[in-house]
Image 1 (cartoon, rainbow, N blue to C red):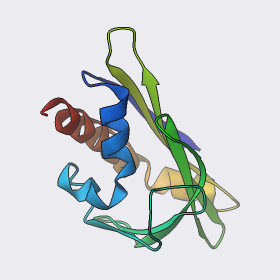
Image 2 (cartoon, rainbow, N blue to C red):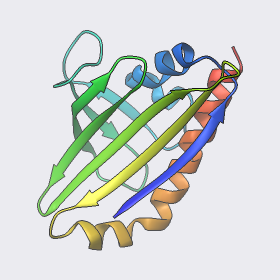
Image 3 (cartoon, rainbow, N blue to C red):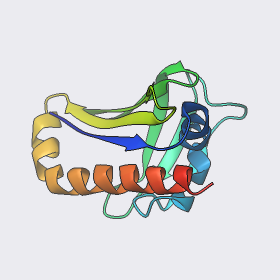
Image 4 (cartoon, helix red, strand yellow):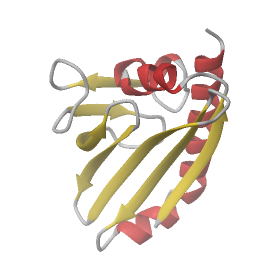
Length: 140
């Protein structure tokens, strides 16, 4: 079960990537994240690990599985019976702005059950994160 949101941001892709890839600062621009703690050093890259604490959700460890600098990244978290895949993609627009797509997919034998259980919360969190990213990137 996949849920997603797309938003256009009046800021260049480089600026959006700078904010999006600095995962430890996400709590600065979205209320859906209490904190993110990187478990390794250096720039975000394939193999990077981070723990995330979010209101109403269990603390989760994500591992970056795909990353294309300036264009987005995918990270996954595992729990018994559930694989959570979160994608963050950036697309440049002709006017110099950026289109961002945020998505979360729940799979595995419990994935559809968990996806349905958290459906409303996930939709709200995706919308809040997109709006926060837009406001943060456009204010500078």
